[in-house]
Amino acid sequence: MDKTDKSVRVSARGAATRSALLKAAAQVFRTVGFAKAGVSEVVSAAGASVGSLYHHFTGKADLYIALYEEFQQRQQERTHQAVREARAEGESDPTRLMNIAAHAYLLGCIEERETARLFFSGDGPPGFEYRLRSRLTMWSDRNVALFRKADEPVDEALLIVVSGSMLLAVAEVVHRDDADAHELAEDITRLLTMLEPGNRREED
Image (cartoon, rainbow, N blue to C red; front, side, top):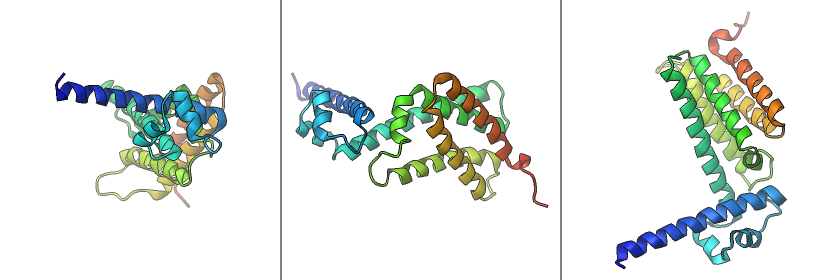
């Protein structure tokens, strides 16, 4: 076996260990919560060693953040795919495109309800809620950008309302059964249409 083959095998083994640790962490966090979870429980569930965990992660907070980033990546792929499909079918209205993206995001949270609950329960590492709000604000900004021209400033009020609405919406849908969750997701995306600049009432 040459060095290249050995390196590939070691890399594959490391990736498998990392994946097992993340899967185990998600299971433990869902069962006992982040605050009560211990590293020993995670490595036991993963069939790994404490040393292997610290080889891949700095601790349980790092595991939690890694799970969140993977979840966010899947959510980003879902929303992008939904918008791409809508554009391919001829949809160009910015309001509708934002609603499609928001709807896809909420459906992803419903589909991965158990995972989404980890991040919207308030039981995370210190500073995580700020990270969560920041990421949703960034996501909202990309969608709000559909409403403005290149030389127009960000509508901060709209951005705050959209990101805040999504934060509250996700927290609600992940704690409902499928029928109620899907109905609420539909209602929320319909209401977001009213936030589009052209649909907001001008002040007297």
